Image 1 (spheres, rainbow over the protein chains, first blue to last red):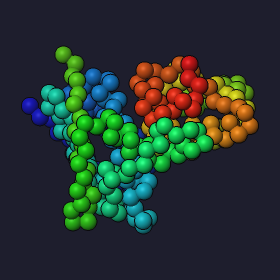
Image 2: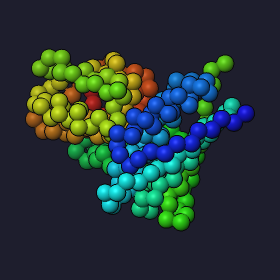
Image 3: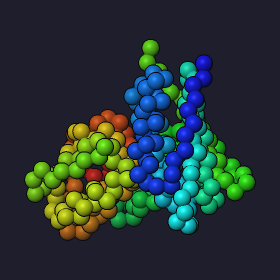
Image 4: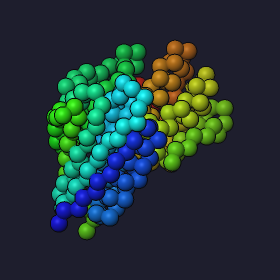
Length: 141
Length: 94
């Protein structure tokens, strides 16, 4: 049995708390264990924050469309935005081993997405970025 | 809900969720720090890259004057993020 949730967020950073609420509720109603919920929260937060902070070159209101789906083993999400073209998978900078002086916070979020999601796919279609992620999860008995 | 409190002159407590929407509130307190300071993580449930960036910036500034942030009582899940992004090497974590 597959459970799904669809919602939209505005391109305003205060929407991140609504995103977190939706993740928590969706995971809770599907009996996802806290560790998996925590990791889903991180991945979704990094993806959506990135879109809100860097995706738009105008000051207009935009909507980010989000679809969650879950079954016994896997959480998946599809995130669609009409911001500028950005494929997080092509971001290659990795300074995780850099010293304090050399360390830069840019790119941290992308590493977190790649670490905690098992699969990330990107496509650009009709001027929209479409990101899909999936993650193996554990459920409470 | 994120909360940050200056407990004493050199001790700060952060709690709840520390993400992009909380950067301004966090920086207001962190920017006032000029000497070595303990940051109590015991009630911090969550931190994203935005929170990590705030801490990194403060640590860089403090190290310039031979001071640092010391992070204490971190949960296992939060600690794993610090480990993964290579922050264990640049922060003292207890």
